[in-house]
Length: 550
Image (cartoon, rainbow, N blue to C red; front, side):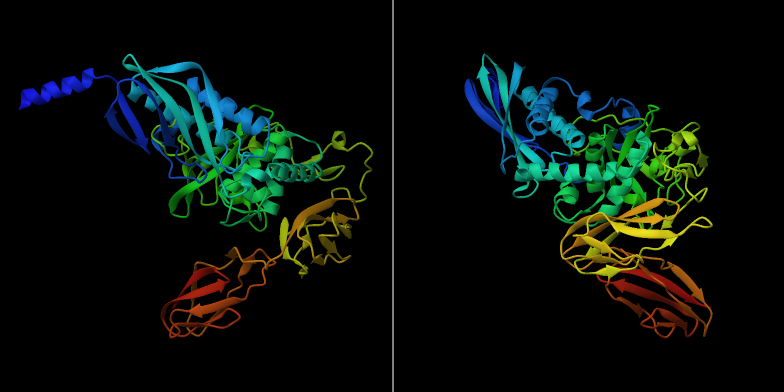
């Protein structure tokens, strides 16, 4: 019996090459001698941040980035990448729901069936991963399928042409290319009007502030893409922030890379995406608009370095682990990322100061140093009556429902002798503002800039977005996680809703009323020794405060 099986196996091997039919990552092997056949395959999606793959290799791969992930490709993968750029970036034409792209290879791939199959799988996945991370302005692109015709002859296989078949992120997305580009250009114009000197650091900040003023962190259609920012309702997650930031950086000629991996959030690591930006000194700095988008806006992760300290006391290098594989596919390439500067930009001697908001002086937002240089006076500007005017606003952006009014914007930090001279809206069809700073949304959706002007001439602007629906609560701030109260004593919670313009009612409840009660206005009364959890809720958002009574 063993001799018969051996003879049968020998006959099969002599019969010719093997036919391989792909189904995902699995291969079904069948005998085939000559002829042709069409093979199809699927690529892993990278439209959402997946669990990072091969994180232990991140240090080895750091430093090989030269300007684009596509620069790290070669052979068939590079050919596919360049064809995708030519078709989807250079032409910027609208596409159908299932566009196909034919890729003619300069020289046919030849070899064994198994080797050719793996080479094509790896090339297609690597090209797609690099392209998606280099060109997030191709927002509609979702995980493609691919096909090719292989020819069997003389015991080997040859392939001379590949076909890429991308699907779109959502129905009709591919037809909105011109609208997307128009919205991006509108953003560019708004950003360009908000800075003065035009250094790369100042432009990087202006883009950072614009997105933080426009975007709300939330899931939704397109939330993992730049489409969520420029085509949908600007409700996105970290990928939406980071991809939109890269799109805008390209418009201003800034080198910017998308970086993906794990970031420490509380006591655990979670998938996250952020940016690296290259400045005039040739160094790369981290920008994480997602985490900086607080109320008020912070700059903890703006142009920071690997040794910069984040929210939870960890350095950037300690709180983040970089993934080198963007889709988690075992056949994709591991990509190099830029080397992050050790120090934050604002901590380095000789950096270009950012934040000059008057003709004479102000504080640099990067280092806090007060700068007084006549060389920085804008041509035609006059010296302000107040020597060193300053201004602070409690918000960088507002979200309003059509018809809603608010006095939430608070002005502070004025220098002695200075005062508010007036308020102005950049688009009164969207937003109107009174002489006393009352902002009223009109019956039209859109965005506008509201600018406060001081008597000294110093100006400060915020972005106001008007939407059709009610403003929903996205976070509840200023509620302590733990609170200790003595028996018969009281303490009042003072939660702050984000955004400030949310009108959703705040409710309170106690898990143990025998220990502590809470009123409808957040007043906690300690009854007896023990512990209770006070739940604070607004809309779909809730936070807890553990009360210990002693």
